[in-house]
Length: 140
Image 1 (cartoon, one colour):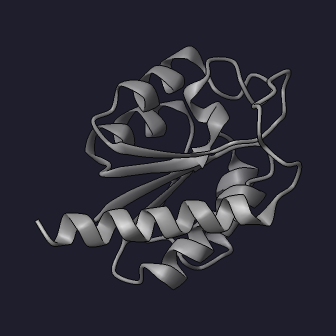
Image 2 (spheres, one colour; image 1 turned 180 degrees about the horizontal axis):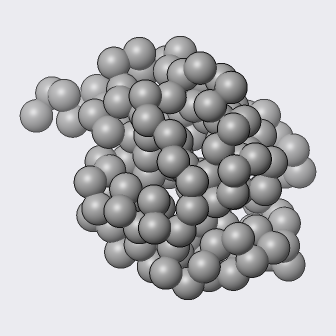
């Protein structure tokens, strides 16, 4: 199953997601795309992604074929992440037929109610949800 991980800024969340998805879903085909080269490099250094790319067009193209899209909530919000998410990128994520697992973060003038600051349980929940979704899809 093709899982697309998108992250920006320093790519720390993306790296954690890639590592945890690989650990919990070893059969996944993981594509990691950074909105900038630093984010891509950080996800690359995990050694867990099958494919890597950087930039707006890479996000747009990868969203067409992804089965699951994973990343911070901002990847579906135009101008989020200090402007790294262009309207075209946000539209590609939001309009993709892929199943989306968005990690809530209270950053960039956005407050998501009910989200505890820095909760590691959120990341664990996201990865567990991805694993359960993959198992359900495999059973079809």
